[in-house]
Length: 226
Image 1 (cartoon, rainbow, N blue to C red):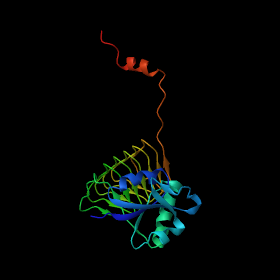
Image 2: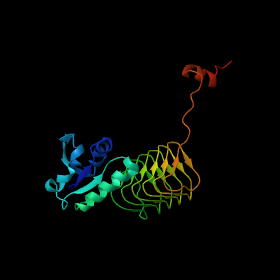
Image 3: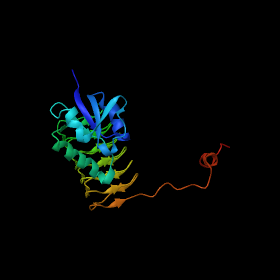
């Protein structure tokens, strides 16, 4: 069966990564970015077309689009380009990796990217334009707003609500029944166990430098047997 034709908005690392994932499900026909940042004619033999001209080359009637940019401007860039693409007449699709178990009672919007080995439990709702990285766990009955960036290894407890445009760093943990305000920045390895307000930042302390070198430390924690 022929794959649907897909345009990826973006030309950075996220877009290039998504190309390799999406090729299994879509016929990726073009990248597109604003003319002001259009620096290459093609990426891995896929043409790069200025966003201002994309509809002239690839009709909205025959092509879908997905936005593959990072969390710039607290995810506002991804939200803005999604709105502009819709204004140009494009329909947006989701990329969901085949390893993801999709329960019949899950509800999702469009323009979402869900990478490999993500666990999304029943009765969860996802909005539009979310990017969910590998090995993430989203508990039962959660609500994820629009334009969130959820990094690898994040764990979200059941019945939690994540507001629009939040950033969750690598291995962050959000407890059960938490309500997180919009545009919150949660740093890597940070535990959130209480509600948050909009625009708040939570960062855990970084790793502490131990006063021994690595070989001496191994001997310290595993002394030789008598």
